[in-house]
Image (cartoon, rainbow, N blue to C red; front, side):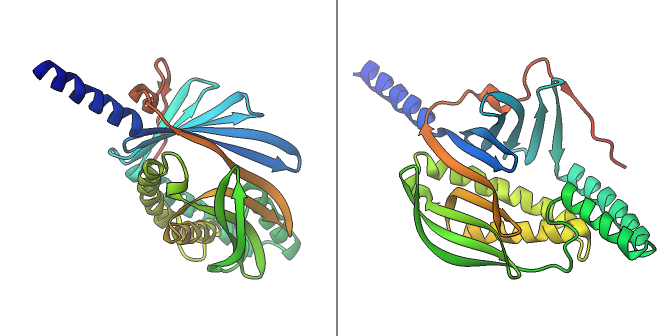
Length: 272
C-alpha cells in the first residue's frame, strides 16, 4: 500500500510539473517589404523565453525574462553572447539616453526648419512613433468580434489622436491552452516593463512620449483581461505588420532553456 501511495504521489507531482509549463507559437508578418517570421515561446513557472525566427527558420535572437530575479536576458546567437538587463541597468541606460536626447533636442532648436524636419523624420524611421509631437493618450474603441485559428476574440482599435495605429483581437486567457500560466508570467513581465517605461517616460522627450503611449496601451489591455491573439499595426492608414497566435500546448519545459546557452559569453553594458 505504501508503495502504491508513493508511486501515485510521484505520478501526480510529475503531471503537475508538466502542466505548469507551456510552449506557444506566434507568426509575425511584415507587409512592406513582405517577410514572415515566427516567435516560439516557452513558459516555466515565473520565467518566459521567446525565440525569434527570421523567415520562419533562421534563429535571429532570443529573450528570457526571469521573474524571480526580475531581469531580462537578451541572447545574440550570431556572436554567441548575451547581456542581462535588470532594473538598475535600465535606469542607468534611460538616464544616458535622456541626456543624449536632450542634447539632440537642444541642437535641433538651432537648426533651420528644413533640417529640423529631416532630423525628426530620421528619428521616426529609427524609432517609429517617436518625435511625433506632444504626448497623446491612447484610446481603445471596440471594433466587433473575430476568430483567430479557432479562438474567439474581441477586436479593439487603438487610436493616437485621430490616427488608428493598431488593432488587437483579444481572447480570454482561458480559451488558450496554458493561458493561465501564460497570463501569470506575462503580467509579471508587464510589471517589470512598466518600471522600465517609467525610467524612459520623461515628459516631453522624443522617446518618453512614445514609451508612455505604449505603456498605457498595454495597461489598458491588461484591464481587458485577455491575450491579443492578433495584432495589426497601421501606418498612414495602411496595414504594415500582423502578429498572429498560432498554437499553445501544456508540456514540460527544460529549466536549462531559461539560462544563457552554454558556451555563450556575457557582454557588459557600459553604464555610468
